[in-house]
Structure formats: C-alpha cells, structure tokens
Image (cartoon, rainbow, N blue to C red):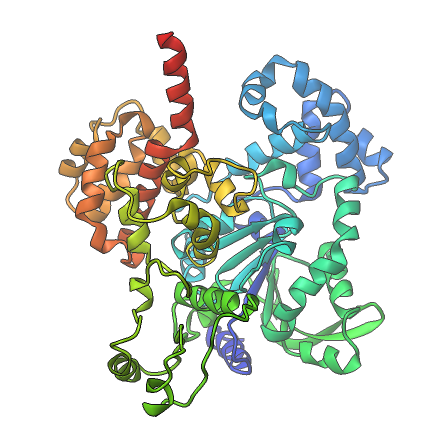
Length: 556
C-alpha cells in the first residue's frame, strides 16, 4: 500500500465528521518516543530499590501488576524514610508523602519527569513528532504519567486536567484540553498505580464514562499506543457502552480508530470490530510503522477559529447559560435595526455573524453601554471580561497602582478566564488582594500558586539551564538581551538565566516595552508570555512571602 493511500483513506474517513478528533494516547506512545518502560518494566526497574527482587513480587501477585505495585510500595516506604540515598528526595518532597504509597509514587514521578525527548537521535521519530505538532485536534485523553504530550504541545497552551477528580469536578470545554485520567508525574499522589488506586478509579469509572461519553459520540477518537486487548481501554469502553442502547451504539460507528505498528508487515487501513460487554463495536484499524502518515491528515483539518478563541467563546457562553439570573435580560431578535435599537432594557448583547454587522450594531447603540469584549470593564451589572493584554499589563504595573478590583478578579473573572487562557499569571492578584491564599480560592489559582521556577520552562530550556550553568558568558538580563540578535532568542534565553540571575526591574521594563506583542502566535509570543509568568512568580509568588518573613525574623 503506497504512502499516499493510507493518508488519503484517513483524510476521507475524517471528512465524515464535522468535529475535530480527540487522541487517546497509551504507554506504547511513550515507549516509541521516550523508550520508557511498560507497566511490568517499571515494576522491574523499581524493584531494584528494595531487598526483595522482581521475581518475588511477580509470583506473590500472580503477575497482577497493580497488586505487585502495592506490595512494592509498602516495602519501599520504610526504605525511603530511612535510607540516606533518599535524603534529597525527603527534603524536597516530604510534604507530599501523605501515605505509605507516596514514596514510590514520588520516585516514579521523579524518574518520568527526567525522561525528555531528544531531537537528533532518531530522524524518523523527529519527523513524526514534527508532524504531530501540526495536528488539528480538540483534545487528548491519556493514561500515561509522563509529560511528553505537554512538551510536544507546549506552544498550544493546552489546559490539563489531572486525575478523575479534577476532570469530574470541572467544567471542561472539550477544546484544547488534555485529560490525564490516571494522574501525572507532576502530582505524584495522583498516579493510579496500586491495587487500591485501581479500586478507587473503577468505583468512579461510571462517572468518568459519562463525562467522556459526549466526546466519543461527537468526535472521532484515535487510539495510539494501545492494543485492542488493553484492559484500560476495554474497561472504559465497557462503561461507555453500558450507557448506550443498540440505536446509540451505532453512533460510535467509524469514530473509533486504532493505530498500531505494522511490525514489518504490509500496511493497512481497514474496517474491523471488537467485542465489549457482549456488544460488537465497529472500529477502524490502521497498521503502519510510519506514524507520520496518520499525523499528516490530522494537520490538514481546517478550523474557522483558533482553539484559544473557541475555548473563550465556549467558556463565556457556558457561564451565560449556567447562571439562571431572573434579573438579567437577554433579548433575542433578528437583526433589522429596529428590533434591537428600540429596546432600552437590553443589558448584554451576544452577536454571532459577520464583522460588518457588528459595526452596524455599534451604530445603533452608541447611547448604550456597549464595548468590544476586550474593552469591557467593571459595571454594576452584566458580564465582565478582560483581555490577556489587560491582565498582563496589570502584572507589570507599579506595585502601588491597581487598575482593577483584585478580590473580584480572583472570585469571578480569573476562574473563568483560566478555562480559555490557562497560562495567565495570578500571583500579583493574590498577594495584593484581601483574600490571600484562602481555602475557597479556585483550584486552578491554587495550582498556579504552587508552581516552581522550572515549571515555566519547556524541556529544551530545562536541559540548557543545566548545561549552561557553569560556563555561559551571560549573567544578567541586560547581557542576554544585548547578546542575542533576534527578539525571539532574547526572550527565550532570559528564562534560561534562572531565578537568581534575573533582575526584576530589568525584566519588567522589557515586558512593558513589548506588551503589545503578548498575543503574537508562534515561539515569539510563547517566549514573551513565559517571561510574564516568570516575573509574576519571582515578584509576587509564595516564595516572596517566605523571604519577607525570614528577613523579618533575622532583623529581630
């Protein structure tokens, strides 16, 4: 089968749908690009940390890896707390060691966070990942713990939900989102690893299935890195199909696409089936050793709006519909001038259509409270929104000047804004509000308050930060800014300096001078927005409170 044939068949297949695909990514994906171990291999690797060997746990658990992991975790608990080898880990992660399984999860997470894709080693994989970065998708579901997916799609600034709980209790928008349903190495205790973890996961599986049901019915779902017999997949499909009757099962037809290695055999794109809960599910199977043939057709899908704009639209419309406020007024008319212009009771206008109609509407309501979305500010009633530029400008404003009500931002605006623009910094608003780090802060804001410097860097920057630490000729923001030619490079390498070498006022002046570029696409915009987050962290993050407190103690 020719290269063109597989690509053409997948392209034609995807034309049956009006929605962009979701990817469902498993351990085979990480094995392919990071060469990390499967579940058995991971147990084998970490058995080296305890006196009993791998064979003991395998036989004791009857080769059930969740059972083996639980026994290993229980034995490793004492080793971790007493062995000098883990002194550094204990110092860094002691607060996360909340139960007897935590130490093993912490060490597994440390290991996986260290596994980063290295370009230049395998040109074939380099090419595949370059194509993968261009795909047009609505989101990714994964059972993987590593951060390879986040690294690949770093510039897309996707919203990540970690674990079942975070997904179940959030208003996810199904646009530009990653669902890490088995947890993530960035949050060690979230890992679904032990027999106990799986019992808790399976107990909530019906709720997760209900959450994922609309994705499976409305989107094509492309499975990469799973076998058809993978227990993780079969259990999820069992839960989903249990929600559907025979008529609705047919809606899954053509939507389930499994990609697997050809293993040197002839490539194929064919209809197939799998049995789940006694029900035969129609699926599409693609066998190839060249995954770029799968990624390229996904990159040719067309969108009318960017994913960030789609997230913003869905988020704001969701809030408008969710809050059933009888005092608010929504007026629905066909646009004919008189339909809207004579109604003095309208408080909020939502327009869907072409730009020149919006200009006409503006003409009819000059005497009313009207503004473009990015110009909306405080009002006694109505929906409040702020542009990215508004909020980032506030981050670098003088510390004694406050353009907005920070309490209101933290309670109402930022929790909603972070759904569509989840990389926005929050530390200044928390520090200078009357709320502080109170318990009822939105969980997305709490997560951002606990980030560390390296969390703002991409994998390449983290690597360069280590390599350049001892012999780099640049030691200040000014030196980096003068030493590199392009603005993209200047902004990129300022972050590599590290927290101790960044002069905050120098960085602030650079950010102020480039504030009009915060919505730039590509690497330039990503590098600039990263520096706003770094400035916010260094100037207003939790660690600044610790410094203030320690200085106060020393001065006594």
